[in-house]
Length: 299
Image (cartoon, rainbow, N blue to C red; front, side, top):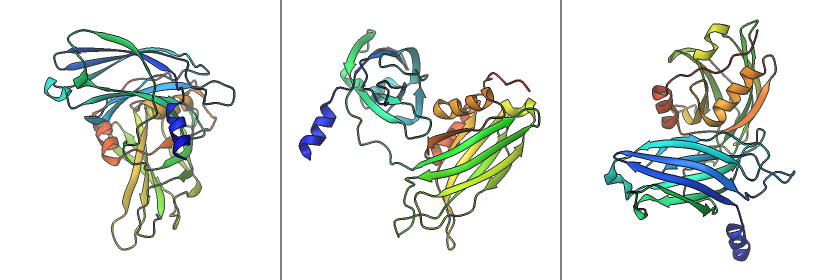
């Protein structure tokens, strides 16, 4: 078994080209391109994208665009982190390449970890590195949730169908949870409407299939945040949040992609799996993120 695990860790995952530039308090990371990525799909390709973050502040993560059906994507994207020089030696830059999958968990292809204290950042650095197996030290998994979105501009009807969840965090002494889901709309950063599913007893993989309809005027759809949170029900003490996420024009990564796909396909339900995120991380993002516009569908 040890030989098998070692073989999996040492298998070829591909290479990543990146650049680093430090200027006073700002660290600029360029994700250039990848080559010879491991094929993750049955067709012999992958749908790669990159997540970039610093271990000193894992709440701030950037995501690149997804590139469809390629093992040699050219990203050419730049991300900027504000980091004092005093913290450089204690921080590691992490660049992880994932394979996008709308209906299942996104598989990590590999990663590059760069302890910033090991680099002379007086000069711009640009180089290739081999991807390695992902570290198992990351934050605990909270679980995944699948739901569909449908928006009909002519009737101002937004439909959210909570389908199912899996691999939820254990919240009860029995090793299980009693999950339910809250669906909340926030308009211009103010709480607006909310609904919730029924409670599913003693399970970490609940099946809901519950639909919720909201009236959202066409001229307000760009100002909406849709917050999905999974809770553990407790009769005796206070209900506890397991994790949450939000979608809308202020979202990023997979959440923004799902919302954009909904807007680009009016009247059609768009289903997708999402990984739950820590509550504090999402709440901070909702408070801080600025708003930008997405292309709107025709009525």
